[in-house]
Image 1 (cartoon, rainbow, N blue to C red):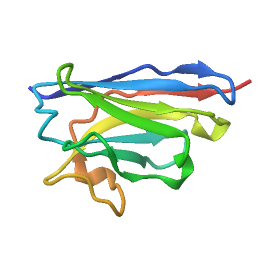
Image 2: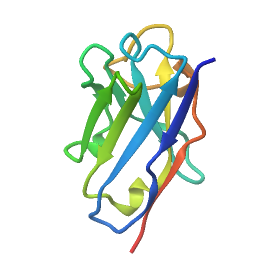
Image 3: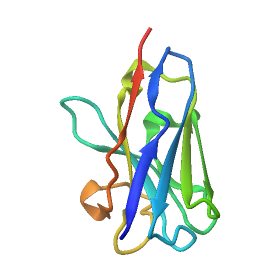
Length: 128
């Protein structure tokens, strides 16, 4: 059974950093890409970054986090990481990870209905 579990969220002041983890099980991380999404209250779920399985680098990322993030993965731990720096109040959201179907990352965007195996999410709150 495939399972994704997000962790690492919390409350952080503006300008701070957080490193989120997406732990997978029943999933071949070295053969499948993983995407990060976020959803703020009252807003639609939006794609943040899609991480290629081949090299762990982003195939797509949202303009809203450009220059403020790094992604990585550890195939031995079946875990993908997203670190966001210089956090802003508008980064406040529940962050989710999922895998794109049927192929890998689309470099032109991220559409939630093209992803599956969603985790429960981890809350990130940026507030002073």
